[in-house]
Length: 382
Image (cartoon, rainbow, N blue to C red; front, side, top):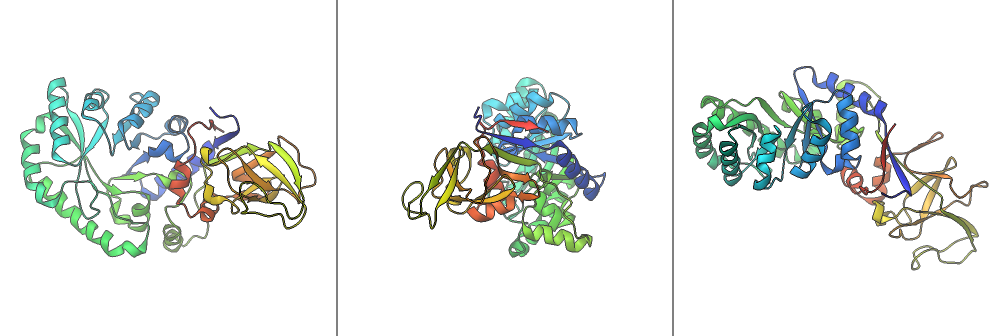
């Protein structure tokens, strides 16, 4: 574990977000907490521990490794759904631990049924159908043979869900493509039901789709970025404001990232600072060295761009981001000391560094920025 920085996870902020989501979607919609990508950088085990204590009953992950980590925390107190990768050799573990899995092609489906027969226990399946994203899912031409196979093997599985994923619901630029997908899903759902194959859940919506296209919510939604207090896109936020007629952001950022000043030095006018010649001191300067670099998830693209908070000042990152260090202009701060707090994401006094502003400087998505945060950084719940 690194001890050069700390990530704080705010329980009160998360519970506020979760309460908003429950009120927004209503009692009839199950919210699955998406914790893939190390819980979007928040730390999968500490985040799931907090979420479980706050009343979350369903978690979604990408792969079996993440499912195992969640299972260590929740045991049998919440459901777990694997939306992506699982080795055939791990399917028996999923069955034995009541973990549901996506199936999106015939070989995985056959492997799941084979494992269920061998164990004498039904496998929980979410059948993913292709509606237009062209990533994963059974193709329309495969549906007839798929239904035939499922009917033959229905004693060996629980039809946990029928699902799909939209190709960019966060942007109005994808409107026609998403609407076409929305038209395809109910037709395919009807075909399954007509054959006596009715899923327990219908789920197609992530955070973006759920907010931009409310009709996609059905009886289950897969919510990732919003539970962490961030919007999937500016468009999704503006759409919410317009529809709700409210002028306040209901979400609260859950994560804060903090480090400390490692060293302080003076640089005279005309000297280059850090690697290469990307930054020259235009005047006599005072700089602070912060023990954070791209190895910890602070993007190198933030060189000469990023901002941090120190002693109530918004300070510019100068020079090239190193693997393990960055340099910051602290010339304005009269009283600065080694060990002083450095806020990379979060609040200090009346100043704030949001994930959005952080990512704007680096041209990274909120999602990408957060999931890059090193797993070696300690996470604590506050």
